Length: 158
Image 1 (cartoon, rainbow, N blue to C red):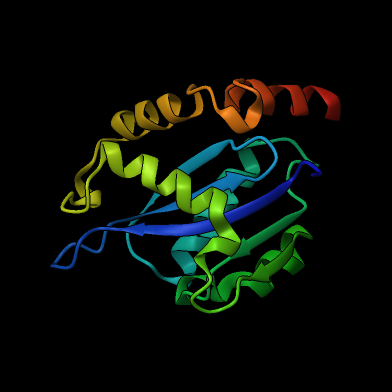
Image 2: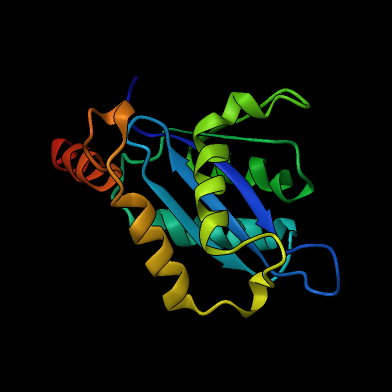
């Protein structure tokens, strides 16, 4: 598999008054996983989250995005035109087509269970959870960590 193909999703607070949610990003080759807090599931919030991530990482890290068909991904045309990243959608009711992201979201739920109000989590707690997820050795990576593989791929870009 080639480096730079990302699966996107949104992890939302349980039903209730809170609209807090997280934009989640999983790179498919390295299993590197990132999450960014969003105030709501709007197109603008997702676009802002994508811009935040793409500004932090070097050019060449993003080749494609694949997401579900949530309303927050209505920003796909902006992503394709502004960032020159191809955007794809999984088939309806086919979460397995974004399995890396779905698995990683499950790992994130170990830190923030479904009843958690995601609007109230501290940024440092989110960073700590993402660090721990990316520092976990994975059998599919021959027991390397996602961070080790991601750094290796970044070094190949330079």
